[in-house]
Image 1 (cartoon, helix red, strand yellow):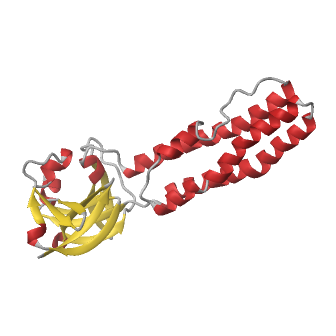
Image 2 (image 1 turned 90 degrees about the vertical axis):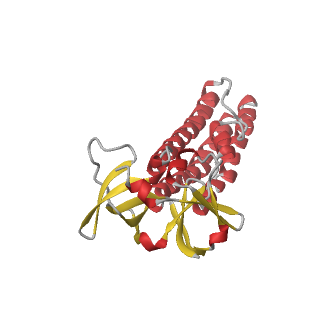
Image 3 (image 1 turned 45 degrees about the horizontal axis):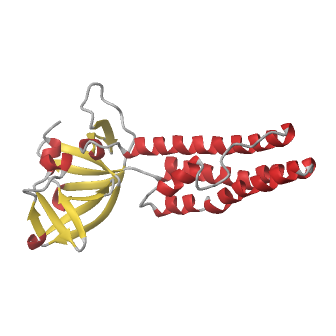
Length: 258
């Protein structure tokens, strides 16, 4: 039986022997190193020791968590701007007595489609995204009422509804967008596992530390015949932990490519 640190990157679980792990910390500021390999984020200073920082995601050929969060923030800022424009266009259609052609079904607008397809394991982020459901549906639902009042000559009443939606419901959505941006910027902290390899200390950047636990040798299987993608060159063993599969990483294979 051997003790392993189990960590998560993207949606997969990985493990490294606990005996070679010196520390597990929130990733300190990283100083980029010119002309280094793509998966080397740079160097970090950990209590006076300068350590290379290896981005495990990029080592696997996928986007790093930082890049994913920046991309997600960009997508949501666009969805926020579209709903501001949606309200403005609804008001103009009332004032100018013309057809309102923007999407009225909340499931079919770009945000609705994005929300239906969005998946995350982070409970805080999932909870925030779910809080959009009610105000988002309410915004779209008011379009038909506004247009009906406009068509009946009740221009002032229609404009009052638009302003009420903008002041209350849209502002609620804008506050929710702001909370998501803050969560992505401040609360999603990348972690670094500091390992002591044959080539010295290395910082391995990961998404989440899951557990530290013993694994029986009988639960460890060879990966021969399995296609593990980019992880194939980093491991030749996997472990069964209940219903989960953990790829056991050889830390020397990570450090050996620097």
